[in-house]
Length: 314
Picture 1 (cartoon, helix red, strand yellow):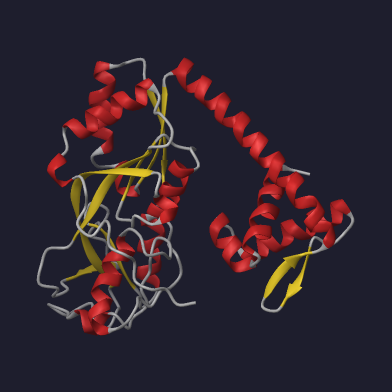
Picture 2 (cartoon, rainbow, N blue to C red):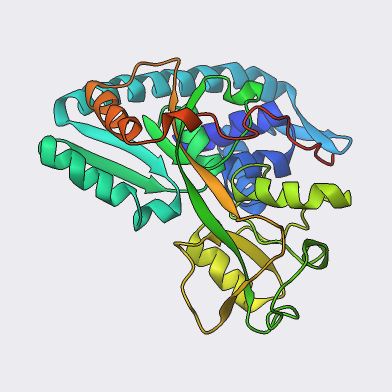
C-alpha cells in the first residue's frame, strides 16, 4: 500500500465524486478509478458504492477512512517538520511560479538576490494559478507567483501583493476562421472553444469570464493545456483560441495573434503570495522583502481581487 493511494482514497471519500476528485488531484478519472480498484483488491473488500449520481463509502470504507486520514496527516506533519529543518540548514527557498517566470522577471530577481546571498538556492516549479495556490496552501512552497484569484473562504489564509501587470494576448491557429481578420469583436470570439491552462475562474480564465459576462455567457472551455507549450500546441491543432502572456507568445508559423477589440490594453496581474498562517523561513522573508521593495506597493491589491466570482454551472 502506497502513500499516494491513501491520498486518492481520502480525496474521493471526501468529495464522493470521481470527476471532482480526479480534478482536485490533477489526474485523469481512469487513473483514479484504477488506483481505487487496486487498493480494494489489496484490502480485500469494496470501499465505495454507488449512491445515485455520486458514490458513498461502504461499511468497509467508513471503517478505513479515519485511519487513512490520520496516516496522511501524520506523514504530512513529518514531511513538514523535515522540510522546515532541511530548508533552514540548506538555505533553499521553495517556490511555485507561473510559466512566464521561466524566462522573465524571476530569473533576474534570483540573480540579484544570490549576488547578495550566494549561499541561498532556489527550488522552482512552474505551474498554473490553481496549482500554485494549492502548493502555498498545502505548504509545498513557501512563496508563489500567480495570476488573479478571489478572496474566497478557501483562500482566506493566502496573503497577496501585486508585483506587476503583465501584457497578455489572444492567439489562434493560422487556419482559424478569424486568423486573417485585422480586428475581431469579443462577441465573434466567445462561441469558439477556449483553451485554458486549467479550467477554473482563476488566472487568465478570469479575463475570459469578464469578457463573456456582458453577453450573458461563460467561456466555452476546451481541453486543458496546463503549460505554455501545451496551450500553444492545442491552439495550433484546432479551432480553439487562448489567452497567453505576451512574453510567452512567439512568432510561430502555426499560431497568430488576434487583435480583439475590447477597448483597452489586456493585462493580467502577477501576484506574490504566501500563507499568512505560517511564518516564512528567514531566507524566504528576505526574498519576499526584496521582491516587494521593488514592486509598486500602492497597487498591492489587484483590481477586482475582492469581487465575487461568477456563478458556476452545477
